[in-house]
Structures are given as structure tokens and as C-alpha cells.
Length: 227
Image (cartoon, rainbow, N blue to C red; front, side, top):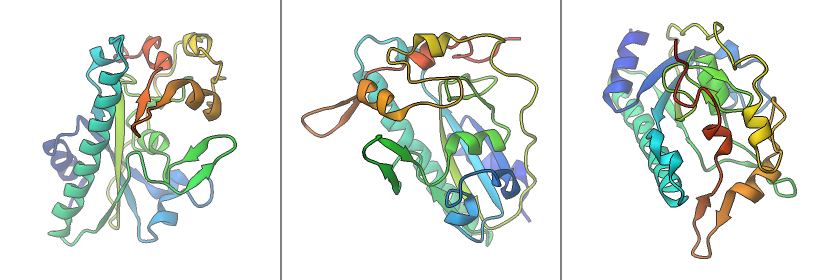
């Protein structure tokens, strides 16, 4: 039977920067309909992996490089998930890749509030890959908040990684909350309508451009927790 170290070796070999594994009982507090077993009833483990955004992209004054890089990372993570599933099939282990970004089903049009079929940020926390910051972003100790997340649901139980509980946002830090131009953050959640209306430009030719990432930029752990 495959072990966690072997899975992580496969995933990093496919191009991921980090990989962790979560057991499904860690998702018991997720909303009904958004748990791994709601997506795939055979699920016994969740493999989660990260790719880092090149850190200087976020400093570009023009928003196109950041948007372009984000879409490339979504595609790369989805490809890793697909190839992981294909590779594990040879060992009679079955997997279901979770979309890194879209598509998803839940959409509240009035409030512009969307929910992926699985919360990737919470999945990453459950897999020991970091914490949720007050900016609602995943923060990995080494890679900071400049990460995008992919996941695969497995029908095989694999030893999970311990959750991270030995670091958090700096005490009393509210740079992301105060720095949000539309006050969409309260330290716990994000008001998606405020954020989307301000940070996403719907181009006339049909693509979206991400025009704001202040919550990433001002975070003292943007590039990781030093020391």
C-alpha cells in the first residue's frame, strides 16, 4: 500500500512546491454539501498541494502579469491533480481531482458570493500546509501567502500530516484589514461582493483581470515567516 511519503514524492515530482495529506474527519465542521465525502463518497484522504506565485509579480504596477500568472498556476495545479490520479490508478488507488478555481456550483448572484465544491484554503490547513490569516488567505510558513492550492480526493486512507498550531498572524496585526481599499475584511471572513466589485475587472473581450491584491501585499508573512 502506498504511503504518504510516496504520494508527496509523486506530487512534488509533478511540479508542486509543497504537499500535505488530510484525513476526512478534519472536515466535519465544513458546511453540509462541501465536505470531501459529499463530493466523492469513497473519499478517505485528501491530498493537497501548493504552487508559489513568483513573489515579484505582485509588485508589478500593471495588473495583467499577476492575472496571467494566477491563471497559469490554476492550470498547472489542475494538471498535477489529473496526472496524480492517472499515476495512482496503476496502483489501484482511485482519485478525484478538485477544480483549483472554476467551475463550481454555488453562486449567490445578489451578493456575488461563490463557494468552491471544497474550500481549498481549509483543506490546506487540514493537511498541515499552513494557517488562515486575518486576510482569509492560506499562509505557509516557508512560502508565505503567495500560494495557490490544488487537491485530489483519494479512496484510500493515507497517514495524515499534523495540523499547524505553532504559529499565527502577528499579535494585533491588522495591516490587511486596514489596508483593504473597500473594507471587505474583518479578520474572520471577506465580504465577497465588496471585494469582487473592486478587485476584478471584467474586460470587454471576456476575460477577468485581477486589479487588487493589497491583502497579500501588506501581509508581513507574504514571503513566509522568518525565524
